[in-house]
Each structure stands twice: as structure tokens, then as C-alpha cells.
Image (cartoon, rainbow, N blue to C red; front, side, top):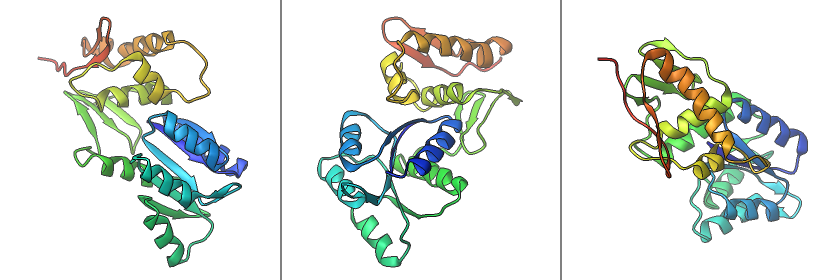
Length: 226
């Protein structure tokens, strides 16, 4: 999943982005409203983590502007203020959730997972494709009951493909969701990671579930052992 963090506290933004990247997410960071609004308008994010106190205004104002412009990406607002009135203001601005500082990182990650599930009522807690199972909360992948170790980036790619059932996902879409804004490499990196995934989820099990659709992209299909 690709996330945007808007926070002018470099220490917090760095800690949050590193933690989320370790969870397998691609993360972009903005330090003010202007950059945050531009990034949110130019990219298709799965969720936005937005601080209230920013150098060029309030995060709640940015939230209102994004909603007014038709951007309905899930937004989690962070704030050092935790009075009920502050929570009301955050939610009334169009935010989906509110988290007061200081916070436990595990709570932040759990809130983001909840927002992503809420965005799509049919989004299951554990994603499956035949006997291939992916559990985002445990960061665990199994096939036929056998656990498959994956790097965070491999995990993110597999999750993207598993959440796009029955359709081919283009290299461009993969780059937009699995790599962050700072990535300056070419699309061939996708081929490298697809090949790595096949070596983990297909070849050891004698399967061919991860297919290349020539001229389109990649498609993950159920391929259970008979």
C-alpha cells in the first residue's frame, strides 16, 4: 500500500515512515500543507496520515480542501491535542480517524489497517488466492499451510496483486503503489520482484499462479494442488 505522511516534525515523520516501510508500505513524506496537497492531488494514495499543526496552516483545513476536491482517500489525523473538542474538529473536517500524540506505533499501524478495511467493506482481514493466504496484521504469507518468508517489498507487491483479483496489474500501477515518490529507478525493477515472488510462492510448490499478461502486466490466479 502507498501512504502519505504530512508532518513538519522531521523526527516523527522519519520514525513513522521507517516503521511503515518496514511493514511493507511505500511512504511519501510532506512537511507542510502545500507539499501535502500537491502530493495528494498527484498520486493515488491508499491512506494519508495528517498532522494538525503544520507551518503553513492546520491539517484540518487541508483535510477539508481534499474532501471538497473529491479526494476520498482515508485520512488519519494526528495531533498533540486530545480534548474531545479537538477530536470533534478533526472528524468534522472529513477525517476518518483521530490519534493523539504520543502514540504507540503498533496502534497507528492497526488504525491504518482498519481504515483500509473500512474503505472497502468487502476487504477481508486475511486475503486469499486459492491456498495462498496473506495476513497483513501478522505480516505472514502461507501456501498450503507452509509459511513463506518475504521481504517487506515482496510482501507489498504480493498484497497488491492479491487485492486486485481477476485482473492484470500494470507495471505503472505497481510502481505507484509499492515504491515511493523518491524512487528514481526504471520499471524493470518490477520484473525483478515478480521473478523473486515466483521463486517464493510458485516454484517450490509446483504452481503457476503468478502470470505475465503480455502487454498488460501481471495477474495472480488461484492454482491449488490437485
